Length: 301
Image 1 (cartoon, rainbow, N blue to C red):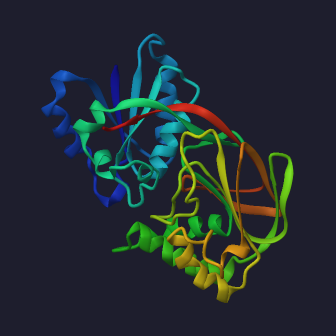
Image 2 (cartoon, one colour):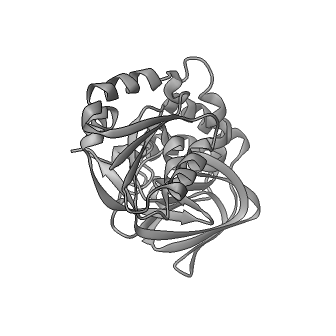
């Protein structure tokens, strides 16, 4: 197997290229590896895809996303569709929410344990022509993610702090809008709403437990939809939502629709902000479906 470390030098505001290189040299005789340092947003996706296009189809290649959830998104989208590709992760970003689906997050910060990891198939979500390994969020949450990307570049602002700042400003300027949500060909919400989430993993935004029942290998998408809500109610909702208590808290649960399914469409009457694993876009309508066991992911022991 060939091991390729795709490193985002800007992840976590610390360039880890030299650190990872030194750790690889310690075990270098045992593994066939190389390092690639990304040059711009989206570069990891193009690098992985082009690499696999030219690669020996009989050999297995494991690409480690060394960065945050955005780097992982790029590597997954570059690797998808190649049966000889595996995806691993070194969690070096400010959020790294996807790896929280595993018992030991620290394992995803250890080069040796990453190399020794065994790959297993997990689900991914197709969103139009893109691939989501963790969570796609539409509406208010999309606006929050847009703002979060801006705030996380501010000095001394961590990933969770950036999300909290973004949530507050979005409460002021990007509240309820028209949403039509169809899950497995059934309309489950049509009217004013706050947000819609399609989840493979259970948390995002630096630890907000939006889909507490989600599992990455059950062949289903967990959908969390929040109906129209006042600013006053939304402010109190944030803490409950962060802790994953929005399904059980009696003051909040009546505003939430939570269900699972295999496909959906999210639609509004105008282009709406949405995010896929932290990467942001705007569309009037998006189509979503689960791809069971769609990618092989390296899980450290």
